[in-house]
Amino acid sequence: MPLDPQLFSIGEFSQISGLSIKTLRFYDERGLLKPALVDATSGYRYYDGASLERAHIVAQLRRLEFPLEEIARILAECGDDLDLLAHLERQRRVIEERMRADREIAGDLAKMIALEREAAQLAAAGGFAIEEKELPALLVAGVRMTGRYSEAGRGIALLGRKLGRYLTGKPHCLYHDAEYREEDASFEPCFALRTAVAAPDGIAVRTLPATRCLALVHQGPYEQLSRSYRKIFGEAKRRGLAIVRPTREIYLKGPGMIFRGNPRRYLTEIQLPYAT
Amino acid sequence: MPLDPQLFSIGEFSQISGLSIKTLRFYDERGLLKPALVDATSGYRYYDGASLERAHIVAQLRRLEFPLEEIARILAECGDDLDLLAHLERQRRVIEERMRADREIAGDLAKMIALEREAAQLAAAGGFAIEEKELPALLVAGVRMTGRYSEAGRGIALLGRKLGRYLTGKPHCLYHDAEYREEDASFEPCFALRTAVAAPDGIAVRTLPATRCLALVHQGPYEQLSRSYRKIFGEAKRRGLAIVRPTREIYLKGPGMIFRGNPRRYLTEIQLPYAT
DNA sequence: TTGCTCCTCACGTCACGTGAGGTGGC
DNA sequence: TTGCTCCTCACGTCACGTGAGGTGGC
Image (tube, rainbow over all chains, first blue to last red):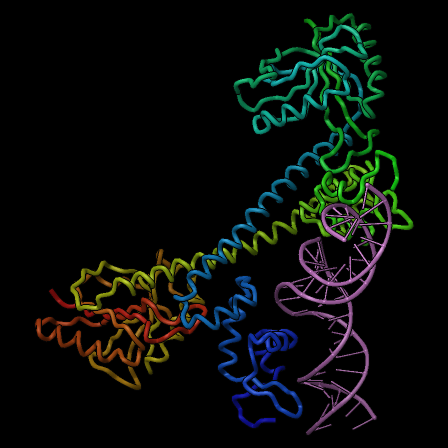
């Protein structure tokens, strides 16, 4: 045990420097911060003022998230902050690249959270009764398709690929047939546009007229939509309304972005526009 | 080797899912993504369509930086994106906390880079000759001290603690004595203020008047300042100028924020205001 | 003897990647 | 035989932290 009052045991030095004892031993092992003196018989480490200065440099650079290996190089090569410039600039690029990636993740998370919150509120509030509604005029981009309804997903995907950043709101589908068809139905997956845009090949951009409609939110798998259609068409007939094609479906909640989800929780709004 | 065309070898499945073979084996080991079938004799792993769906879920959640353990819990508990809400919100907090920390680091790095660049330009441009200068009026906060010059650092530190975010530019020091004193010098460490502010106890806020001065940049340790003082006072005498106290020192480059630095690279500007 | 500070050594963390050495069927 | 795909097992990464078991002096 040295008597020199300048020397600190590892415990004392840990207090002074703010580095844990384990960290100090680790830095010693890595050659980053050697004690000023090691007692040959006990193996005790002793640190001095120069160690403290070095410890502060290491701690500062670690706070800036420099890797230990680069800190070692810096300590070997730099004697002055001026020599640090290149290192600082590189580290800033590293940190900013990480922030950029995190911003993307945080943005995606925020988007998903907003969507799910909305869907949760819908499901909670849903009385699922037939109601009358006023629909405003709506600028949409749509893909006219003929075939099976189950192919609608491809149309939605095409819209997403071609016009992704102009689209807004939930996916819609317009039905142009007067009756239900299994094989060669004529329908049109579409999305609202946040701004007018030139229509790419195979995509039509137009404005759906403002109209009154009868609306019903269907809860459950798409295979059971026919039940809700029977209900709402029955009501339209009872009221003597003249349905105006195309009718509309809005997919309030379908398969999620992560999970395909439970189809019994899907929510689909059916809208039957009528003449007034 | 099963003949079922629905089954994929690990190599094929890696291609389809975008997960590396090593990652697939690791997920298997961790129980996160078990193959649909493992050949008992060869140990070969075979995956099917359900594995693919699960693989996509895992990959999506990994992209959002969820830890594997949480993904395992999510897969066990959630069947729908709606059930994810709490997880998504927690993860967003995690990511945003990391961004907050990174913003601080990036800000500190940017500040240091700007300071060092400035110092590097000064050192590169320095002719270090005596010149005449017009000084504008300057609003400063200072700490009047009596004692040894070497204590000036404490005054600077005090200013930083009390008024940190109002201060701008480099540290200054004003010298009120008519001659050099060793022990009971009267000097005043100070900083320019970016905005007027009420003076805390022990700190004086005032405006230094606009004036003409003789200026010289001293390069080297503070101990050698006297040489530069001799030079500049000699020149003032030759020109017959009437020096107006306090004289000023500006620490253009001193010890860095990381390294104490090499004193031979310190830059200190001496300013002698004179009556016109 | 108890308590305190110090020591070494092995292992864990997190999500994989690397590489050695081997197998089985074309 | 060569080449290909698959396998297991051990070890490395990054910057430490945890914990077991032990020492030496008050």
